[in-house]
Each structure stands twice: as structure tokens, then as C-alpha cells.
Image (tube, rainbow, N blue to C red):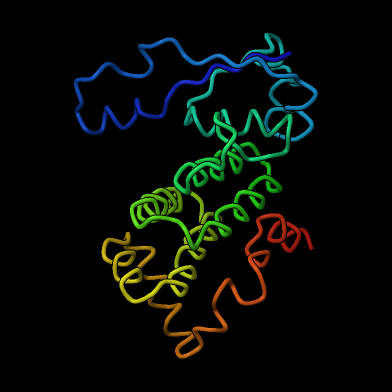
Length: 217
């Protein structure tokens, strides 16, 4: 077994906003004990840490700053290969975005692809509020790694499946990077709405694993 302590990412946000609320690092971290074989099999990140010569390899313990809910979903995935929240239900779109980003950090492209499938399947039911939060999370992370552009492209493409009112609601407060993608998308595909729906030939074109294969080739 390995032990992973999770501290909330809210600590950084509190410092930036000048909040006087107690910081996450002042509270006891969440503790998860997971089977090493599962964790190391699916994640090269954890495999290198727990089988290496550094502190994590010697103690079989690690402390991570991460979204607690998103990490819990990944911890469950190690055992079930299913993306479910603590209630056994599909997480909402913002949470799925955070899971996707953590999966990237843990070097798990297969899980990233599975998350993208889940997000794509909820495109007809996602609320405008969740959609905007999702796009803001993706936009913020894209500043660090443009691989996350697949999330933003999904969001832009999904706009084509909205009616006029839905389109207006979802585009009213899009972050700048998403607006630029939308403008380019409209320019390239003017008058081809039907063809664009549901990513045309399939969302698999945006799989992280496919991009990795292309780089290796």
C-alpha cells in the first residue's frame, strides 16, 4: 500500500485574493491509502515516485496539492476503470475538467480520453453555468499546457448543438482564449453547421493518446 496526502488547491486562491479564511495547508490533509500495484500500473508519475530513490520511494508516502474531489474520482478509477463521484454518479462538467487536468499531471492519457468521452456525452444536458465554469477552468490551465486545448475546442464545437438562446447564453462570458478559438472556428467552417455537430467524424480526433502516438511517429 502507498499513502497519499491531498491538500486543497484553494490555498493558492486564498493567497491571491487576500482572503482571511483559514488556509487549506493549516488543516489536516486528506489521506488515501491505495494499492501500489494499481497506482503504479496506470500512472508513470506514481510509478516513478514510489519505485524511485527519493523520499516517496523510501517512505511510500506522498503529499500532493490537488483538487480533492477530482483526486478521489481518479483513486476510484484505479480500481473500477469508471469515472464516478462519491455517490456513484457521473461528475459534472467542471469536475470532469479537473479530473482531466490531474490525469495529464499523472501521465494518464487513456483516462484523459475517457473523461473527454464523458464530457462529450453530456453536451446536450450541460447547464450554461457549468459550461462557463468548465471553459474557465480549461482556459486557465491552457496557459500552462496547450494540450488542454482539446477541452476548449470541445466547448466551442458543442456550441453548434445549441439553439440561438443557448448559444447566446454560453458565449456571453467566454474567456478570451475560447472566444478566439470560436472566431477561428466560425471563419474556417462558415455555413457547415451540420457537418460540425458532434465533432464531425468523432471526438476521438481530439484524444490525447492519439496526439501522443503522432508525436512518437
